[in-house]
Length: 102
Image (cartoon, rainbow, N blue to C red; front, side):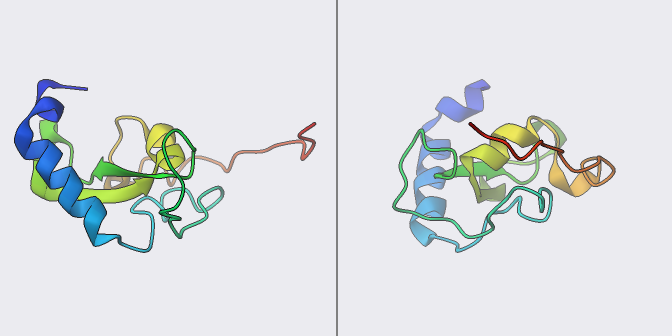
């Protein structure tokens, strides 16, 4: 995290966005293979499907605290530092698994 994440303005913007309780993950279209779309606000950190804020436009690309959205912790972590609107994720094949999770 950069210094901008430790400012009062960021913390206040984060609280405001989370309080609005948008019903869907901002990254749902980016990860249709794994994202459950709807956010369950009863789940708390560190649950992978708990709500967290996501910069919809990276600070390095001119985004600021007004470009925050709500996403699942899992989706945000999977995205890394790539902005969903760039379309880089759309070209990737879906994650394959054996289906056995013992």
